[in-house]
Image 1 (cartoon, helix red, strand yellow):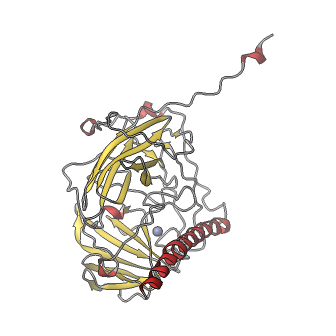
Image 2: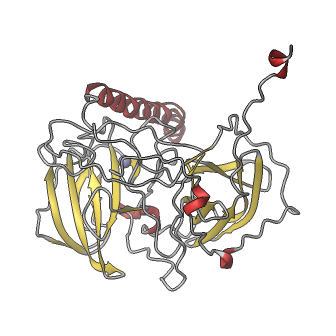
Length: 403
Ligand SMILES: [Zn+2]
């Protein structure tokens, strides 16, 4: 009966689906807690960030970004009630001398989860966009059958740590039923199809459970491109095998760090390494009914603001999407890398076409930038903030010095 079916659907949509997502979030959080609990704090004794007291402007060569002037028009901005309940005080680094800490990859211990920094201005300039590079490279089709839905977990995008709850994400996640077929997203050659019980492919051994890596036939600016499927089950390909787009390679599973079935998808450029990832949403062809907003949130010296909330607001003043500017890994294990063309540090994906205002608030200043999202395409936006303001120290009461 259609009525019963619609009741079942309602039950699924409003009860089981949210429950599953909640469970997933909780489990993911629990996994990290459990993981951070077992590792010994003696693992990375050499990690001493050399934070010299040199003010960041002293050694910075300002990056000329004069061509990318944003049009911050204050005229057509709707009145907006931001839901930013907290504005953390931003911190500013001095120019860090990056000494890569070698990680012992012997599978006995995992690195500690670093304290990721939010509302933080990096001391190092971010790459600048290169207009000579092709803007769109949607080489990857959807990994599920029937060109089906591909619902990205928007609260855990590429380059974010789910508000300090998880390890920095170097891919994107899509919750799917256990056993959903996983398809080759492009033509290529399988180079890895195995478990990582005793191999270091991710943050630690047994991170992905089972994984498949395909090296694409195409190269990007002379560099090889790899696509990684994590937490998979029932792998049906072997290393060395050629695959064509649409061929089944495995099924959705929940091995390794995952405790609920989902696909973790990575795009790696240059080398098949944990630190060589890019934002997969810039590679997956969006449907015609959805577009992307790719952007930069930087200070006047071209330094990226990290872990800052950004909202897309529709003409009714409603927030329709939220993301966060890329967070950096102070240990440099996970590197969050921008695209050569855009040099982005945030991406809104799966946005319905239409007019929006990009909104953020930093150091007490609100920024609003009108943007137009077009289906199947990438739009670019850049917000250059006001110069970094050193927080004013709390004045000491003069009364106590008075005679
Ligand atoms: Zn993931």
